Amino acid sequence: MLRVKDLFEIKAIDGLKIVAGEKGINNEISLVNIIENPEAFDWLSPNELLLSTGYIFKDDTELQIRILNELSQINCAGLIVKMKRYFETLPQAMIDHADKLGLPLIELPFEYTLSRVISIINEKASGRYDLLNRKTLDMHNLFFRITLEGGGIEKISSMLSETINNPIILVDNDWKLLHYTEHVDNKIPLAYCLDLVKNRSVFKNEFIETIPHNISEMKKSINRMYRLEGMEIKCRILPVAVSNNIYGYLVVWQTVRELSEFDFIILEQASTNMALERIKAKEIEEVKLKIREDFFDDLLTGKITSSETIQTLSELHGLNSSYKYYCIVIDIQSKELDKYIDFIARKVQLEIRTRKCVDLIYDHSNLANGEITCFYRNNRIIILIGQNEHRPPITVVEAKLYGSKIYDILKKQLNDTILLIGIGRQYEKIHSLHKSFSEANESLRLMQKFDERGGISHFEDHSVYYFLDSNIKDLELEDFFMKHLGKIYEHDQLHGTGYLYTLENYFSNNLNTSETAKAMFLHRNTLIYRIEKIKEILNTDLKNSEELLQIQLSLKIFRLLNKNLRLDSK
Image 1: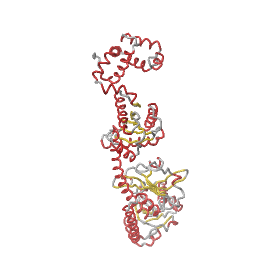
Image 2: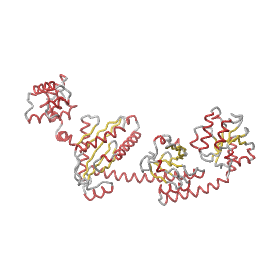
Image 3: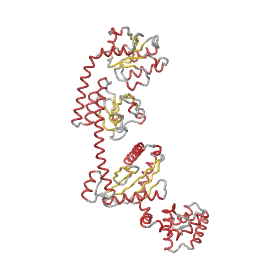
Image 4: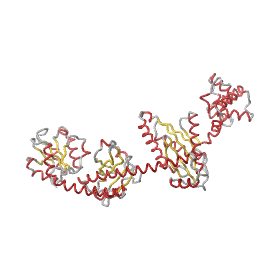
């Protein structure tokens, strides 16, 4: 075991002089490194001995103090500065601060090159590395055996915490909790400081934002402080990665003891094993997801006809075959995605966005009057809501109220996005769920046909439109409209009046003049004048029930064919 005090016995580098921090004379040296970049602190390890020419801090007193603080926090063995290049003598401020920290500050004679000093010290430390390598190999074999025996992340985390004597937290690449292992000697409990709910964010955003997201910027472990209620908890963070893919992060809650060089080697081994476990879990999850997707696709398209099959598969995938279900489909159109020219990049961003929406819907599942199941297909989110057969059916108003609340929640989270929510009817049997799904999609189709820029609609809102659009040809619908309201349409087109719009509002308000005037913000006499002109153009008194039905149907046809109507139609 090589210590700082042993350096002064090495004749090959005679002339070393300790000028400060003699309290750390017994610090253990694990390896030697050169520091000529003030941004390199993330990559340093405990017990490293740092060498420098002093160039990076020669004219900056503040940086001199910062470097000493960083090295002390990481528990580096000491700092050796080559003299006569940029310093005749080391600044008194550095000497005083190094003494205060107990960090050895050593002067190296000018005639020695830094590379030569590294070679000499490493040669002296080689015997110690043989022992370290044996211990490392033993731990590697232990982790490998855990993996072979199917111990998984939980067993690896437990063994790791026990070995390095600190609590361990494992999160996925979105910083959601996968697993944690507390340590019996931890005086700052994880449960007190963090939200330890699986698949939820554990750390505060301001902490997460300091972590590099690119694997090229985080090849080794980095040091960060987690601040809470005036406390500063030292955390060591490693990417759980294979090649250029990050599968999560391993966080050491460094509250029991400082990490040693051996600990760092073990952490890297453990992170590799955890990455392999994550890959295995991801592959299993993808297979399960594909089976689940196939089931829902078959269920929502009505391909499963056997009651026994539906019952078995429903229970397997979280549905209750005895519940009453209805379906909601949410269409997401985002302008933000248009900036991604590459198809793959756009697809990845769309998946991130839709997955976020699904998480939000589950987070607010208490808003639904029943049990929800939610998933996504491309840019559409599908919500299935089931009710116990003994509960009263969900009304159209209740369904639309839930849809409205979800609309508001998603709208707050999504910028430059158009949301359309279509709701199908509730059915007594899960076998009929495909009908509700089809109705929800039909509601969306008709909303898009009416060029609505976001909103919610129930299939019942469009039942007449659906009947007309699905059963009668466009040409016949156009003929019907022009026969009964063509004169009004032509008058509006030629004179710039809005009599069709007035007529729509008049019928929407049950032919009540006062209510229609209020809804259109018109004076009552103005509305009466418009109604009289409409009667005159149509040559009717708007009292015959058959004529009123024909006009109502014509108004709905107008909404269906608005863009396709021609003035020369007869």
